[in-house]
Every structure is written in structure tokens, then in C-alpha cells.
Length: 574
Image: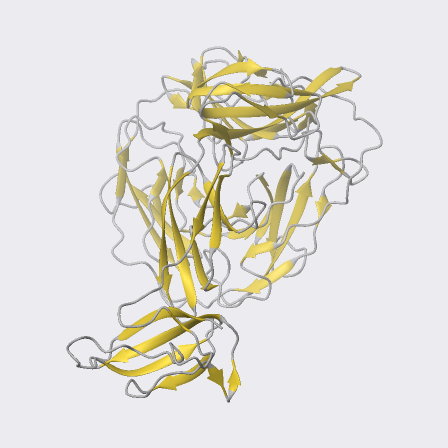
């Protein structure tokens, strides 16, 4: 989706908001101990903050370990040279806001673990091991080796040689610039040995690269437009930088973080300007421009940055209020439509305008409507977009939000059957349903309550009417469930009225005369034990403690000679 992003330089007054808060540390947590010296420090994001700065020191607010550094919108930072061991380390975060001074948050601290072993070897970062045609004016840079506090550097023109640099000890930064140019068209051998308070790395081998012929490298270039560190730049701006004599072209690196080029990774330009990519409002962009010619690339060109205009938000205004012109979206993830009907869906959010798109593929979509109501053409994937138009002195800005949703077709349910399972004084009803819908189930009342499961457990013994309805409103089905609970050998009913017929309830022996039942237990419909019968006794007379029980349904559980259970139901009639 391509958003309309226009220059917006004035804010609508009277916005409701709230004061910004400092981020909560995520790792390490304040007060943590035993933290590795190569830890990555992270924190929770704060809505409306353009970027973060971090400083690390040995006391609150100090920056003697890591000088205050911008990390852009990233919420983590790995100290490039590690942290000192067994030390209480204090971290200070600052919030970068485009239209007001930075806000410095209270420091938090943790304690690093002691180092217990020597560091490992490291690798050359620049020039790379095996590189050729390296400019003779190049310096040497290497990667941080965890727990190392210094590095011993030797450089020579033969394996193990030290004729260019002889065991030079370097702490920070992780680089060494020889006092003179390297010899041209020569193999250069570099050996770097990290070390700490425990000892030195062992087994480190030479890296080697080959220099190119004598030539003059171009110098670095600087931003002209937008200017370095400038704010409130229009979203339609282009990049322009100073022309460098002797440069054949320029490699341009652009990112929204100082540590990665997520926008452009070394794009090559033969002029000193380019039309800009689609800028986002309220964003800081980090730029590095590296001129090059046949001799190689300019060395150690600095990173520069600029910020765009305030846009839709969210961001904090000068009064500390959170501003967000983007409308909220509360549209559901999916919409069901009945298979045989047309269906109109309505916008769920207040906004100045609406758009409905059909998503044909991950990279292609079609605009179908620009109204609050939308006639869905069929099942598939769609995008619902809402937008507000904010007017300012320099023009209008469209602030939008959207939601991708899926449309599925439904149909009325068909009840194929029900299954009734017997328990002690209770039953379980399972409903078998067919149809292409999303169904829910209720008992005895068409208005519900409904449940997603098609199984009703632990119901008192009774007749039930089951309702099944489509969640998308495509129809309701119902059926009557009348449990048939009769088992062979156990009477369906008895009539304890003293007339001498069916006055007692008891198991009826089969024709063989062999009694398979050892004991019988009788329960009411709620599972309360009423009587225990010996199968050889006359039977149950329908009383409890001498008191006649009412006409109703009763349950039995019989134990046979193989210790299996037989469960069933009978009626007491008066």
C-alpha cells in the first residue's frame, strides 16, 4: 500500500494527550548481578518517541564507559567494546523528540560478572582477510572479542612480521592506523591478540591482505540537503551532497538506525544527488556517503543524519502530550457471509473516509469501494482502511490505519443425529452436525446461552431440546432428545402402591436362572445414593428411611460377577 504523505507543518490545537514516560528496562533488570560483560542492553519501547540515546558509566549519569550514543528507534544496544568486569554499571537513556529538548531518564544499574577466562581470538573487520587491491592509506579495524580489554597488534610484510607495527597495545577503539602508508602491491600480514586480566588469547593466526598500486583516494563528502542534524525536513525532499574532486562515484548508505542500513545498502551514484525514497514522518535517517575512484573508497567517512517533519504521529508535542491523528481500527479478523445471500458490512470506526480493497496476491490489491458500507462480493481476503484528513498551514495530511480481514462463507446447520451417554444419575448429549458454517450450541432456549462445544456433560436425566445456530446468522436447527435408558433384565418402571403388582423394583433373573449381578446401587437424578440392593433380596420399595419417595426417574448402577458396571434408568410411578 502506498500512503499519501504530504508536508505538514502546523498542529491542530486542543489535542488530548498524556505526558510521556521513560522506558522500562527489559534486560538486564535493575539490580541484576552476574551480568556478562558482552551483554546487549534492551528496554521497552515508548509510543511517540522518535529515538533513543544511551550513555553508560560507572556512576549515575556518567558516560565514561560509553559516551552518549544515538541508537535511532532501536530498543537495544550492545556496547561495542564490552563492559568492565565485576563493576556496577549505570545506564542512562534519553528520549529524542523532534520538537522539544531531549528528555533524560533516571539511570538504572546492574553489576557485571567477574571474568574467569582469557578471551578468544578476533577477526579483521577491515580490510577483510584475503582482500586485494586495498588502498595503501587504509587503517586496520577488527571485531570485539568478548571479555577482552586490550589488543596486541603486529603488522608486517611477511608471516609473523613486525616491520610495520611491533606489538602495539590498543584499548579502544578497535582500530590502528599505521603512521605511514602501507607499501603498495604487497602482502600485508596482521596478527591481533586479545587479552584481559586472566591472560591472552592463544592460537591466533595471521590475517593477510594485498595492497593496490600507489594512487590518490578521494576525500569524504558531506550532506548539503538536508543538512546534517537538521529537523523538520519535508517528506518529499531529495538528497544532495558535496561533490568530491577525483571521485568517480559515491556509495550511499541509509538507515533508520545508526547500526544498520535498512533503507539502502551501498547504492552507487555517479552524481552528487538523488531523488529520495518515500520518507516517513517523525523519523530520523542516518546517512553515510563514501566517494570512490580507481584507487579505492574514501576512508573513515562519518555518518550524518536528518529528521523529517512531524506527521500523523504518534509523537509528543511541545507540551508533552501524545499526538496521534491516525484513526483507531476495531474491525474483526474475519467476517462470515451466508452462502446464498449478499452481505453488506459496515465500518466500525469513526473517521473522515473509508476504503475497501480486495487482496489478489501478497503484492497486488484492488480498490472496491470508498464508502462506510461495503457489499462483500464473496469469500477471500480484503483490507479495510480508514483515514482522517488533517489540515495545516502548508496543506493537508492524510492519516490512515487499516486492517486485513478474511471473508468466509457459512450455511445453516443440519443436525445428523445425537448420542446420549449414561452416567450415574446424569447423561451426556453429543450433537452430530454437518454444514459449512461456524456453529454453536444451546439447550432448551433458542436465545441461549450458547457454547462452542457440541457436547453437554453431566445433565440431569430429562428430555432436552437442542439448538444449533450458525455464528454468522445463516440459520438455526433444533431437535428433541429423549433418552432411551432401558437395559435388559432391569424393569423400566415399578408402582409401589400396595396392590401386589410391581410393588418392588429388582433385577429379573434371565431364563438360565444364573444371577450375573452381585450388587445394585440406586440413585436419584442428582446422583444421591438412595439404596443398595442384594440381587437375591425382594427389591426396593421406593422409600428412603421409611419415607416414600415421589414419582420420578431414578438411576441404578449394577456390579456384575466380572466386576463390570451396568448403568441404567427406571421410573417410579404412583
